[in-house]
Length: 317
Image (cartoon, rainbow, N blue to C red; front, side):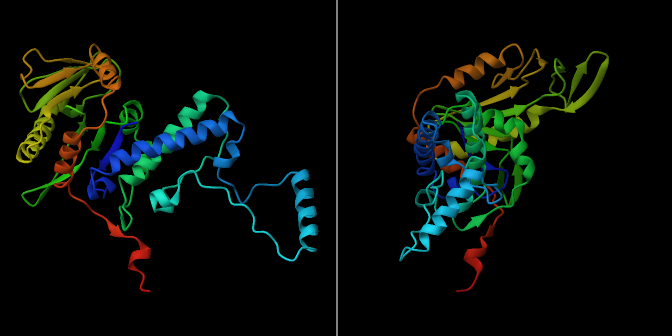
């Protein structure tokens, strides 16, 4: 699962240390997958599930509790109840809010994988919107953002995502497009999508034409925002001596882009070519690289952040 290291202008745990958290996430994810998969295979999934206070006990459970209480009346000291260990260890996360125990038992291994990805996605959003001391108010729509989920859930762990980050440039906020940091390349991605099989007629003008059957309408030229993103990323990468290639990509997963004279430094990926490109990204097996983390730190250090201190850090002792 790709790592979400920045969301809009939310504070990010990765901003504190871009060298530490990517590796920690990969280790943590593997540990938790081993834990939940073994629990499922051994019919012990209840050990990683959230215990609901409103759960109605069965007749046998009620009987067992009555007998236990009866026995405790004649014991000198009642033993404390055994606690169900949380899925994520507090010592690792240092933040209880980052725990999302499962509430349902998957029927198949495939169901388990989907539940686990949902769990890790929510966990990633929390890491990309909070630190130990601070947090940002997260729009609930983030958890339903299909495009964000698409890239995060389908790409390998070593990819780092900045999702529409806001940069502070010359004391002014500038929202950029999607930035995907790989082990050798940084992809600046602009998405152009509407209804299935829409044809986008590209040009150097301010507007492109989107055509679907007899319907025609103008859309803002996506290269404007893409070039802005690419320029900012390239300047920061160059200024920080980061040896990564910056590539600009226009993507339409469900449509077609007709642009005969596309600029040389821009790649067009539509319904005819996108899937092959994306599969190549998914098949990348190279581990995280120091240069990659250096590039992430260079970009994150120029991002704008809006956050507030957690209540426990503002309350007086």
